[in-house]
Amino acid sequence: MKKFVFLYNSEPNEGASDDAMDVWMAWFDSIKESVAEMGNPFMPGMNVTSTSATEIPVANNPITGYTVIKAADMDAAIAIAKTCPSKTGLQLYEAIEM
Image 1 (cartoon, one colour):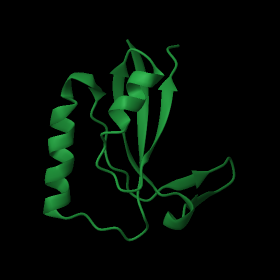
Image 2 (image 1 turned 30 degrees about the vertical axis):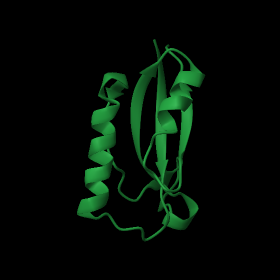
Image 3 (image 1 turned 60 degrees about the vertical axis):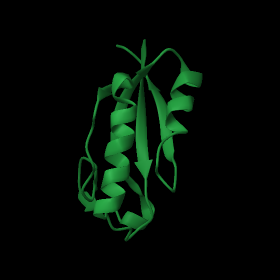
Image 4 (image 1 turned 180 degrees about the vertical axis):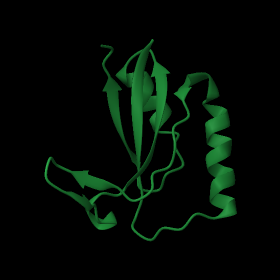
């Protein structure tokens, strides 16, 4: 099995509700056999260089969290991603073993 990373997108100022959380938790339960790492939601990020650290404005980076799944191939990962309850979609990347 290969590993794939789901990066979740959201609109700026989109608030979480109990109903939305219930939908997400039901989805995670439905894909639990494929979840390698549940992941976490993200707080605001920082852009760091060797000389500075500046906050990334939410409007410039709407990535709000991640999950690592295991799937046979990209097509299988896409099939799982298509069931995600996110209204704004997600980004999907294969994680290469090193």
